[in-house]
Length: 239
Image (tube, rainbow, N blue to C red):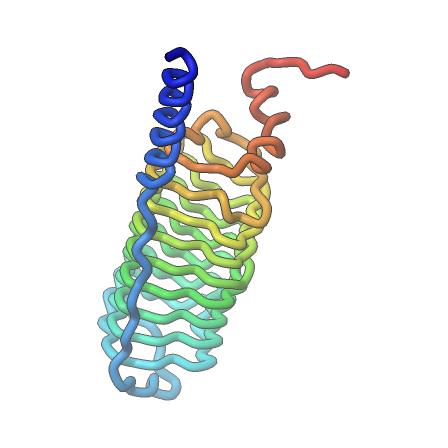
């Protein structure tokens, strides 16, 4: 009887464990199907509150331009320069961004929905207070990404390098990091729901390791993060 109870208890624990893993909801990826696009008019520039629908920008230099509050719908930007471009409160919807580059791109309080970002090379991008839903960021490298107090839902970072991303005070729901190298992440005050970190190639948390509740990590990641957890708890580890 004791053996049967023991086996039953073990099976029950295993079922609960498997059930917990099964309850991690996967992120919904964007399904982008762009219509035939019109070329961006030569010499044209951004305008505040501009409305851009069904246009293709290829190798266009938008550095330093003012597009606060602009709306991009069914657009494609490829190999465009966005150094210091002002796009705060912009709405970027059903749009592809490929091989864009820029330092200090301003996207504070912007809305990105059903967007694919591929092979971007960005530094100091400001997305604080932004809302990202069904966004795929694949490949490339982003240094010092500012996502403080942003809202991320159904967002996938895939195979990219994130150097010192700042998620302070942000809300992340159904967010995944397959194949990503994440270094120096700031998770201070973050809220995580169904965040899957298990497939990250590297995970380094500089601050806010105590906020990992609501995330799933692998056993190897737990071992890697053990010194950070110990420091957070004030535990001294000695041989």
